[in-house]
Amino acid sequence: MNTPQSHAAFSNAPDADLQSSFVLPAWTYTDPEIYGREKREIFYRTWHYAGHRSQLAEPGSYVTAVIADEEVVVVRGREGVLRGFFNVCQHRAHPLLKGAGQTKLIVCPYHFWTYDLDGSLRGVKKGSGMSCFDKGSAQLTPVAVEEFCGLVFVNLDADAQGLAEQVPGLEKDIRRLIPRYDEQVPMQEMAMFDGDLKAGWKVTIDNILECNHCTNAQPGSGGSDQHGELPERHLRDLVAPVRAGDQD
Amino acid sequence: MPQPETSPDRLGDRDLRALPSKYYVSEGVFQREKELLFFRTWQYACHSSEVENPGDYVATDILGQNVFVVRDQDGEIRAFRNVCPHRSHKLVEGRGHTTVLVCPYHQWSFSLDGGLRRLRKTPDSQAPAAGRVCLTPVRCDRMLGFVFINLDDDAASIAETWPGVEAHILETCPEVMSYKLAEGASAVPPADVDCNWRIQVDNYLECQHCRHGHENFADMLDICNQNYTLGANHAYYFFLSAGKADNKAYPLDPEHDVMDLHFWFLFPNIGFGQFSGPGNLSLFQWLPVHTGSGIRVNASLEPAEPTDPGMKVRQALRTKWGEEVLQPEDLAFMRSVQVGMHQHTFDQGWYIVDRESQEFSEAMIRHFHQLYQARMAAPEPSAN
Image (cartoon, rainbow over the protein chains, first blue to last red):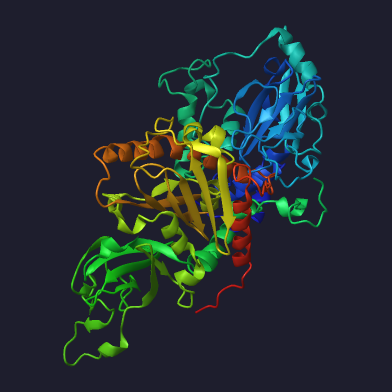
């Protein structure tokens, strides 16, 4: 693998002029420092899917999601407001809620610190000789939440531009192109696209952004199916020579 | 009763903020911990019965610094750097018995007091005089039959480091000096724990999570009856037993067993504990492997002779409970905390301090963190 001389080389790689443009260098798919920057500059500042509206219909219903190293929870408050928080207890950093479900309060399993659905600290286990502290000084840290086409998204950057604003016209397109969109509910079996791909995220996205490979490789996508290989297999072959690209 | 803001019983918010999370995840902190804590404090090496006879040795290491403990011809227990002064090869592996220490690489040999005995040469060779070469000694001290080493040649003795602790353990658990190292203890490897070593210590130093996190343990105790004491460089806490022979953890025999639980924490990373059940004293040593992973060393003492025919069975049930119930319960909490410490909005947690109740108080964690920060604030050790 080619080692980067400096990260300045990175900015020279893609070019607006398609005649002279090169693809991203291979090391940008495998370099841990690049992955660190991607987390800070991309994943922690953009909108990510957390759950479907139907999972968050009732007051107290919640879903959790993982964004790289961060965990968030989205919960519908008693008064119907949807809120998102970092899913980490302010006491000893233990994660708060798991999976998805329904709850009246957010209770940490380690020492039972209890938060209201609006993120405020409600109760701390203590005895009579307790040194009091102001419960107002500890509360869950909010993240931005937005419902878009019935899908609930979160953004760790509280100042981020709204998702609908970022993609003007998309909602209208979706409703035009997918008939009876609002009647659709999430599939119970998501195995078709879920799971650990053993390939870097950029390899995966590169793969869905072109269909050059479709006619001879993708079973059921219109081309010959002589090898019967799955797309996942191809992703792995792509990343294999440059290891360390697994970003699980 | 309302109290003035200056009262030590009413701490301000600042005094209740826990050690910042960067201390649990930072590579730089880990490097400083090595130099300022682990290479300069007393660390458990072995039990004296493992080097019972002259020539018995045990090799160990403190975060990659190799040391061995050996009993010399005069019966004295000594420790040396486990590295040949010739070409830095390791001298001994594991544990065993020898009359002479011979380096496997070029056969330089050393007596049990560390002096060079022989090196391979001809009469014409130019070589250092025997008196100029010896093994590098390491500070060695004992407490309750356990052998400790310290890589800092200038370190204070154990008695000065943890004053009164040995006497307090002997007073609280008077049978301890008649105990022996538990059968098979030497063969048990340390447990891998995938979290920062201080998350293990923090978890050991509070029992706020016990009532709901260790339900069967809580059933064995009179959980309201517990208290703690902070020492200059240690902490002590106890739980009174609920006195239940049949409880949800493991069976007890009040006629033959010790019932109350006593725990000591010796800064920075040693614990001694007596659990309910057949007589026992456990030593714990929590060591980092890296920022997010560590090991737990455990060496337990048990009565030299069974106190009653049922003792072995009760011991085995207690061990099984520890391995299959208590430790997995704690491990799940500790792993989750490690994940949480990486969350980028979690900067620092809180201490709950309660002078009247150990059940709710995290005063011992706070004490531990204060001692830790004082040590970590020390200037970098000199280059030599």
